[in-house]
Image (tube, rainbow, N blue to C red):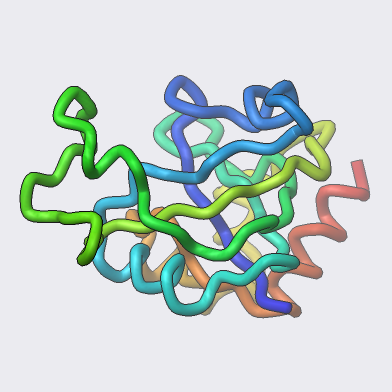
Length: 154
């Protein structure tokens, strides 16, 4: 099993929206960064744990967890001319962009804030702190465990 951090803006798609989706499951789509795409396409697998991170807000942080429930598949938005994620260079036989489905597991009582994460020596090498803008990030098992333990101490 791999561990991931998926970043979202809560006004775009929040953990609450994921939790209230049918079967608590939704498509994680709209990824338009090649490194994030490669993670989704090549490394993210069904059964992986996802830390959901709300960014671009005053108190950014990890707000809950989800589980990957599908392998990667072509993001349908890339073929929809009416979508902001449309890519005219992508084709059904050679898609550029991929998505997965995730299922909500837990919403933390309080987020594990970015400021707290920055203060933890054991989290100093997290991709979040090195490549903060990347929307799909690999997390080590010890990093994941540290964040999950913090979320349960509240």
